[in-house]
Length: 391
Image 1: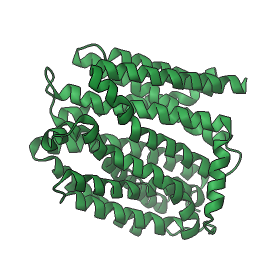
Image 2 (image 1 turned 180 degrees about the vertical axis):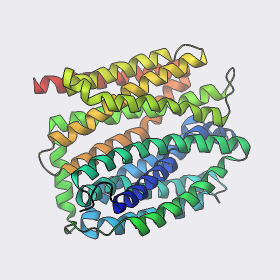
Image 3 (image 1 turned 135 degrees about the horizontal axis):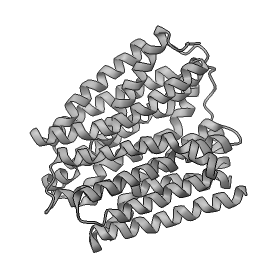
Image 4 (image 1 turned 90 degrees about the vertical axis):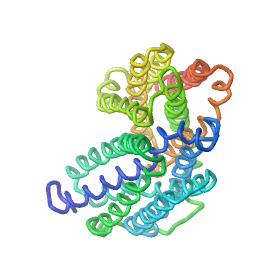
């Protein structure tokens, strides 16, 4: 058992947190580059966004199997294998010369990126004492957010001083470093109990979760909210890269600082839920998403940014509550239930561009707002239905 404040705790926690920063930086760094990719390869916004969403799709699907595979193969071996795959695919992305090659390696990278989210907290839960676990999970979640923001800022800055492909070089080096630190400083599992991989048991667990209304409604809320929230950033990037704003890639990367309000939303989620109940607090988060979306219709840049601050607060308030709700209400196989929530979450993000594209083509950003409000209205109804089920 690794105790809080021990040398082993600090080494292993640092290795996992750096790996989380690198994983989520790799996942999200493409987003501020999409307008530049669209210009370089003469692509529509939807086509350009595939370079981003294909990785989130691969990550989401990989979560279906990694948790079960780690039960059979061991946590650290599978984590090292996926981290090595991340390093190789990130280096390969520094060499691509066509958009097709970019898509292929981003798909491979996305599948490899799923290893850490599927395994890290399970490893912590087995090897850390309770005080160490609570602290480490907080650090780890913060590292996820920092990686997503940092990757976007880094990519936008490097694209402005050179070429969009330059962003992959530092990420390849950091990927290799994080792989080494996991190998060097993450101890072998001591409390791990190996379980044979049974495909039908895993499928049975997933089917059982999907038959529970309290879980299925939550999966849909999380997935459909992220479908809109993440892809709004994609389409607003094209708005802000065009006249009259003409923002550079680095300035587009700064837009993702709005995620910091989401950190506040996550921190306050439990307190708000104690006053309203979790489903009503989720509904409040969705109402804030709708409000933030409407605010972005104002043409002034700072008002648009304010709208995204409001949306980020609402989204992460709802997301935090939905994640904990799944863990609390899964009758069995809680790890599988949480993994299935993330599958809906990332697959939703991957298909959002397909849903929003017709509205974008017909009406531009106002069309995206209309489509967003329609979907948020649906998730609001789902949250209220969840509330009625527990009354």
